[in-house]
Image (cartoon, rainbow, N blue to C red):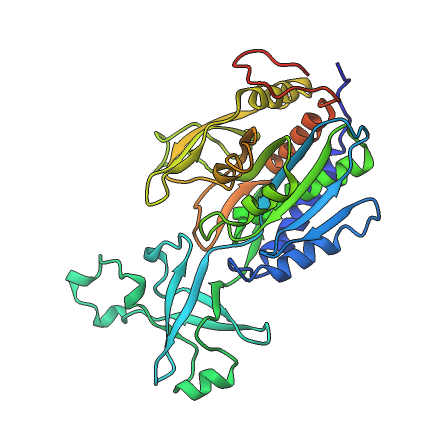
Length: 381
């Protein structure tokens, strides 16, 4: 058995927080992720990394393992975020939109957002809402559908919209923001899944400094919020021996969700024991038992507290990655997050640091000959 690896925790935590901040401030709607991908790629000029960008836009950074016969593991986090897209420009300059991903309509009225024009510039706008003083009592509790909303750029006609470089198809996102809360808590736009990307970036840095037997295919995937499309294409190309998704998991440590589960911010990375999306997408992930046991054993080896999550209503890229080629042993690793899909989400940097440590140890314990044969109990590590 390998001896536990040594990690520089303070430096790791600060580095992940800084990367997360920068990533949260870059708009990147599904299908328009290029600036996010370019930022991540620029952080790794190391010649020892093999890099590839495929047709959908996935960034694949491969760190070859110390043993070419050891497993090849795809670990992935998505770089896109949800938002909206312009479907019509009214004569008086207001924008009409369609949703891209699970934007909650109840938070939109009155919100500050940005539209990305054809020059890549962020143009501010406000989601129009009826003045409170003119809203009758029977309307005050209503949630308007996105088809009823209008977006105000501060102009007076359609020509002014065109002059700003905005037309049908322009992407719209929440106004990017990031703040550090008390202690290790952070809040920002699109922590789902920019914080997961930062954890994956830290994993790359770790295995570059301390090589592991297994080969790491780090995939920064696109279009996860738009029907989970990108990572599946990467998996078909890479044909990994195993795959692990890094994404949010819904925290249940707020007053409204205490009976939903047991995930707490700062409680450590969460093992995905079950996910299922029953609204339109009948898919989900049950973890491969051998991979689950191996990851759990890696956590115990470094004394890392692990949480568990079993929930319905959401899913990750792993639900499709596991079905590629002849099937891929797959599972989810998550970080608890509050207020998911809202304009600002909240998580704890210590959980992100824990994910990088956990996965580095997982790869370190995968020598040549490691078997992914299904075993419900026990683990070879």
